[in-house]
Image (cartoon, rainbow, N blue to C red):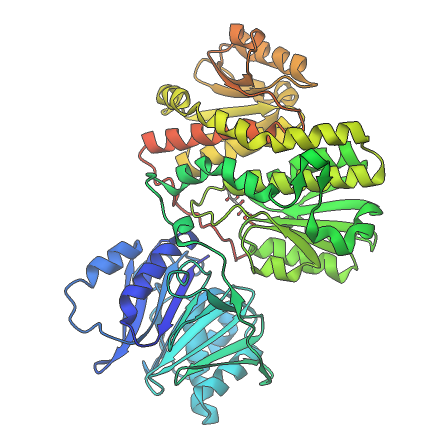
Length: 613
Ligand code: F6R
C-alpha cells in the first residue's frame, strides 16, 4: 500500500517519477505528490486524486527542473485522502522532505512529545510526525541527517520504506526499510528507488533489494548500504528478468482483461521446467532442500489472505486427496492473533501474489518462531515473503497490475497442484498410473483455458442482463467451492455488487431465504463427484424462481434444461477444474464492472499490496 519512487542522476527527475508513480498506482491511488530540489529550493507539490491529476496540475509550472526528486502515490491509513495528507511531507523547517510507505505505530507518543516542543503539524499523518522526529534528533544532537535517521529508526515502532531528501545535501537521498519493500535500481551515474521494480525496469536491470533494518545512502553518485547499527554491507546486485511489455497494457482496455487473457501463457510459464508429462517427470525445484520435511510433515498449514487464501483452499483438497496429509487453511490475519498450535513437524505454506502482505508476513514470523518449516508461493521475485521463508517456488505469472487478482490465482493453484502431485507420488499415496494421467491432464490445462477464453462474447451478453443486479450468489461444491468464493470476491471488489460464495449444499441452511426472481445464482456445476448433488441444488433454486447462470462441462444436457444460461467449459479431471472454471467468473465480473462504469483496474478503497495489518 502506497507506492514510492525516487530518482537522483543526470536526467530530469520529474518525468521519471511521474511515470514511476503511474506504474505503482495499483498500490494506492487516492492522492499523489512529488518533491524536487533546484535553485528555487526544496519544493513539494501534492494533490488529492490520481497521479494524472498531480501531473496536470504541474503542466504550466516552470520551476520543476531537478536532477533529484521523490514521489508518492497514497492509500490512506492516517487521515482522509486530501492535499494535506498526501506525501511528500516537509519537516517543520522545510529543510527535509520525506515519502513513506507503512505505518508508524507509536506516532501518537512521538507527536505529543513534538507538540510539547512547539512543532506544528499540517496533516493528520504518522509520516509527518516521522520526518519531524528525524528533524528534532538532527537539531538536538547536532548530527548529520544520516545519523539522525539512524537514531530515529531505533525509536520508531512499525513498518516503513522511506526516502528523504534534504536542502542541506542537495545530491543525497537517504532511504531505509523495515516491513515495506524498497528496490534500488543502479544505472549509469543514476539511481532509482521504488516500491517495486516496475518504475525501474526501463532504465536498468541491475537492482539491489534493501533488507529490513538497512539504510541506503546515495551521495555524490555513490550507493552505500549500512545496517541501522551503522555497519556497512556490500550491496548485492540482482539482475531483473522482467520485460517492459509485461507491465504495459498491450492493446487491452484494462490490465485485468489482459491478465485474464494471459492465463494460458502464465500457467504454462509456471509449469515450464517443472513438468514434463511425456517423461513422467515433475520437479518443484524450491522443495529440493526440504523434501524430507514436506514428505514427513504431520500437518500442512496454509496461510494467506483474499484470493491467495482461496488458492489455499483449493490446495487443501489437493493435498488431502493426493498426499493424505491433514491440511489447515488459515486467514493470516486470524492465525497470527489466536495463539495457534504450531509444532516443528508442521509444514507451513504461505501464499502471496505480492509477497508483501503484512498479515501473511506476520503469520510467517510467528510460525517460524515455533520451529515450523515455511515455504512461500509468491509471484513477485525478491519480495519480502519470498525472502522471509525457508524455501519457496515462484509462480512466474509475470507482473499482475490489475488490483483484482486473476492470473496470480491460477498460477498459485498450478504450483500447489504440482506440489500435491509430487508429494502424493513420493509418499506412495498416489499411484503411478494416476500420477502419469494427472501430469498429462495438467499439461493440457493451458490449451483448455485458451478455449474457455473463447466464451468471452457469450459472457459479455450474459453480463448485460445482470449488470444492474443488487446481489449475487455463487455456489459450488468440492474443488469448485473455493472457485465460488473467488467468483463472488471478484464481482464485489470491482463492480461493488454484493456477492456471496457458499458451498452449494449450505444454501439450504440459510441463504436460500434470499432466493427470488431478482437473485442471480452462479452455479459451478461441472461433471465431477458432486455433480448430481449440485444439480439438486440447482433445482432448489429454480423452484424458487432464482435466475441460474451455470458453468458446466461441455456437452452437459441436464443443467441446460434447468438453467437460464449455461457456460460450457472443457472437461478436465475434477482436481484441475478450478484452473478452468474460474475463468468465466473472472470475465463475468470484468464485463459487469465495465458496464457499470467502474474503474476495473483500480477499484475504490482497495490497493494491491496490503502492507498494513
Ligand atoms: C483480490 C485480491 C486480494 C489479494 C489479497 C492478498 O482480487 O487481490 O484479495 O488476494 O490482498 O494479496 P497477496 O496475494 O499479494 O498476499
